[in-house]
Image 1 (cartoon, rainbow, N blue to C red):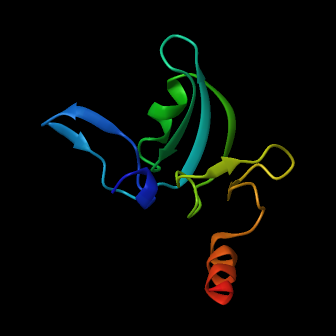
Image 2 (image 1 turned 60 degrees about the vertical axis):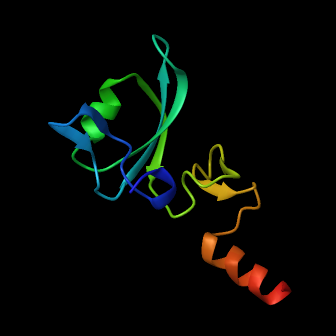
Length: 102
């Protein structure tokens, strides 16, 4: 499981600490000036403290189905959530609309 599957992005990078397979529960936007700049992180509850410790949390919301999908964007305040292509629709509504337009 990984970001596009709704999974936690934590990876210990060793056989003793393999990639996490738990579902993500929080989506964090973190400013990490020392290494990567502004990054988006999907994390499970167990690894959330590690993600938070990696930099300054700029935004956060509950992890949703579209977080991490190609074409998804993070809306600013007051919405503060991810949507597909900035259309503002929930994933199920987008799929229904696509199916009815087919």
